[in-house]
Amino acid sequence: EVVSRRQLVPQFERELVGLVSGEHRRVPSHLGARVIRLLARGTTARSAEAIADAFASSDVELQAAAIGALADGIDGLVLEHLAHAPDARLRRAALSALRARSETRLGQVISELLEDKSVAHRLSAMEAMRFSEDTEIRSRLLRLLEEDPTPECASRGRTALRFLRVRGR
Picture 1 (cartoon, rainbow, N blue to C red):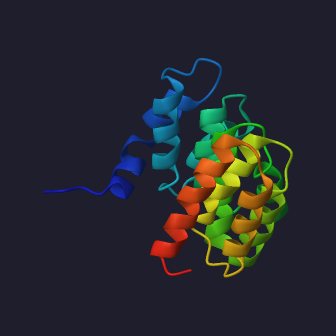
Picture 2 (cartoon, one colour; picture 1 turned 180 degrees about the vertical axis):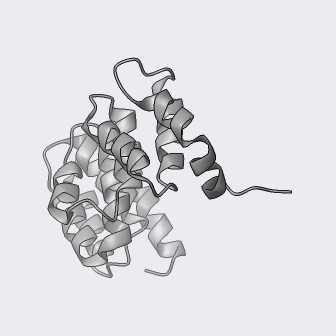
């Protein structure tokens, strides 16, 4: 018989929280991130506290997992701020959470990132474009391809443009 993960969380919640909480965290970041995503399926205050602790931690991988877990509960302005974070994992998680909440706001944040001085931020915007329903996104991308001399951006931009063409935009 297959048991859903949601059913396992209450049964093992204390152990799961113990793996990722406190100064004596017992698992590496990549496993801790998986535990946080699993705890997001729980419904108790203990799970919520562990996720909030991960969000406040200095471990970027745990923060990104917490953003995903808390996507519905994080204020939109906080997500917009996190979409401009220095770390690509946080940007990716914030853009994904924004996508789930507001297509309009996602398009605006993508536009902001496309105009950012940082190549990494422009690359994140191009990655997020694949999931946007914004019909003006193709013209923004074409303009970027004309103006941006960075080889990485040109390559990623062409890939994003091909993806948009396949999707019929």
